[in-house]
Length: 225
Image (cartoon, rainbow, N blue to C red; front, side, top):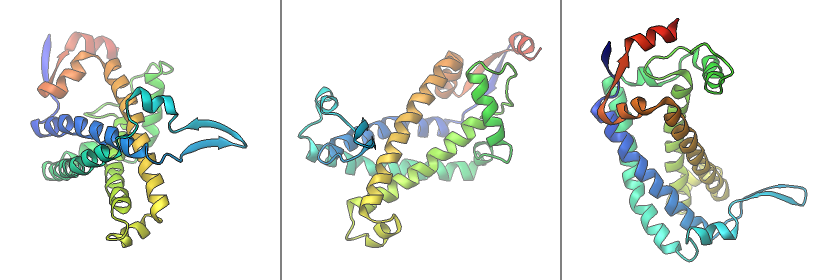
C-alpha cells in the first residue's frame, strides 16, 4: 500500500531552487575574478601538491581576461544571494522549521552512523526524521558559510568603506583567504549533496519538487525487519 508523506513546504522548495542557480553563478563569476590574482596553493617543501588553479583549467572554462565581467555578475547576484538567504532564515524561524534543521546534542554522534551507513559499512539504518543527523549538520553549516561569505565578501569588496569589517575578518588578505575557502566548501558540498541525492533515489529528489514523497508501506516494513 502506498501512502503520501508531505516533506517540504512550498517556501522551502522555492528558496532551495532559487539558491542553487544563484550560488552557481556566484561561484562561476568568483572564478573570473580569482583568475586575475590566484596565489593559493598547497605546498610541502618545494613541491606544489595543489595549485588553485592551473592555467589549463582557466583556458578550458574560457575564464582568462574576463575580470570585469566576473565583477559585474558577482556584484549583481550578491544581492539575490543575500536576500534569498535572509528570507530563508526568516521563514525557518517563523514557521518553526529551524527545530527540524538545527543539530541537537545527538547529531554529531549519529552523523558517524549516517556516514558508515552511506558507505555500506553499517547495515542498521540511522535515526531519520525529516533530516538525518548528517543533513542537519551540513545544512546548518551552509547557513553559517553563507553569512561568512557575505561578510568576507564585503570586507574585500569595500576594504576602505568597511574598514571595521575588514579588521574584524582579520585583514584584507585573511578575509580573501576565508572567502576563497568557503567557496571551495560550497563546491565540495555540491558534489556530496548531489551524490547523496542520486543514492537516495528519484522519490527523494521528486519530493523537493512536488513537496511530497510516496512511501510503500510493505517496503518500509521489510526494511525495518
